[in-house]
Length: 313
Image (cartoon, rainbow, N blue to C red; front, side):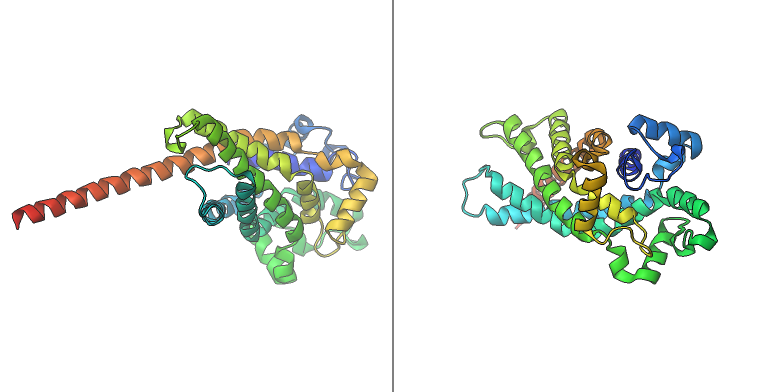
């Protein structure tokens, strides 16, 4: 919930930022010069809740993703580090395990982010339809989504799995690269803060949160510019697509917007990384520690019971 407004601003800048392909012909109220300009215009014309459009899909999807990314990373890292000395820190193995986690998670992140992006672009599509007029090929009713579930239902009904996985290739590449540096950023920071002979369990909560922030910077710092291409593809019409795929989107974006255009939205994405990833790793490590303590308590109780039974015998 904390990160959703930042993501909405990021996506709007990527698709409707001044000078982008998507901004051509749009009214001034839907063309954004900066993140602050985007917030101001959205608040004025759409209200504060517009920053939370498309929240349900990623909220549910992220719950699943946490259950995919972390176990996949841990299992892959354990496999790659077989035979290594305890506490060994091998960068390429951490990067490879992170990439594997990203690849596994892209199966879930693609449809959830597609739905979020479609919901964030509903107003843009409605304005385009009004400008063109229904007789001139305005907005297809099947692409006028009333909510997250309506969006998913219509896409699956009209375009099947291929539609719901629109932008999969760019999402896969983005997530493999992003989560490689996400986990590397976290593990490298933990390795530095803990020092020789210590583990994550020896860190203070603020240090865990700090490592989480570095993970977030690694994630979003490496996801650009691929994330911009993904956003453009997923914001595109499924019925009358403007782009013919990832490469076509990249070529046309470079021609119109230049290389700098591929980095639109990076500032709100980096701001988003601070609270979101600090909270994620605090929750993950806190839960992991709580489970470990609970297991120790259970083991101690079982040992005590067994000891009592032996003494009684």
